[in-house]
Image (cartoon, rainbow, N blue to C red):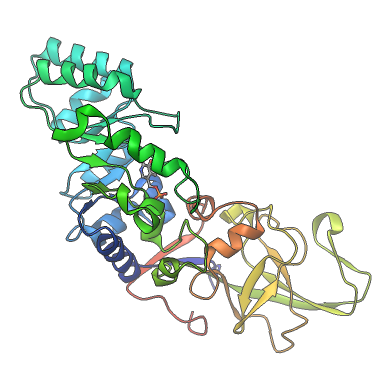
Length: 371
Ligand SMILES: *Cc1c(COP(=O)(O)O)cnc(C)c1O
């Protein structure tokens, strides 16, 4: 029998979540962010599942865009960091990839390339404005001259103005409103489409919706907002990481489990061993008590996660036995809940899943009694 660890990925749930994003920001067009292999879900399969719904996709770099192109994806693809080197420009232009331009050096290199090659027409450009994140983007005071450079040197460039929100997941934080005002009150913006919203913006900040939204994490059914939030409840998990118990044993009070003996039994204890470890991307920093779903209930992680295995306390589930299905996250166990126990966020768990884990793309996720 093959190693039982599998990430099942529901393409129906992905489409459902995309349609929710569209519904929540109905005035905007919804660009599907499928960078980092669609947050670990498989970018080609995600794009194929969404291409009749999404007017465009976004990825981090030309290599990710090429993977989609080679798979026959026809929709426009936005490069979220534009080009890293001017050497990429011939291919970007040949393919018609949309580019974010976020820095003065990019503008200089782009204009120099266009002049040298006699290029007058470029694919759509998204100009990134730094409204407070202080990571990428032109300072608001520079925007007028950047736009002027582009409109003077190119024939009718297609420009969209974008910014990225730093704290939209904090529901009472004034920064999102400030970032919105900085972009929306800028005198240069009247003539151009605008894009501000990530998943948290879509779910909680209507003024960020504007012309284009850019959902990422919500497409995958993991909310940037608290679990109890009603919009979080409406999302469907896309990935279900499942494995099996491969061994069960009894240990006496006082015995320790695993590397470093971190878990010490305070009573006679049933320990189950699950085929999943940090060599698969399951976080080694998972604390004692991190939930794992077995036989219809949450059982606590007991002891350190090792490379291929993790151990759980099955004392409360005396019927559990080797061969039983295990859900690490999915329909019964939100990836966000697991992330909280690991001092991280769902993004790192999903993107951190390693190639050793086989991906199984399905329409609907099976129940935990069926895998
Ligand atoms: C990754 C990314 C997004 C998506 O963010 P989520 O929080 O996953 O919705 C949106 N915009 C930009 C520029 C990004 O890099």
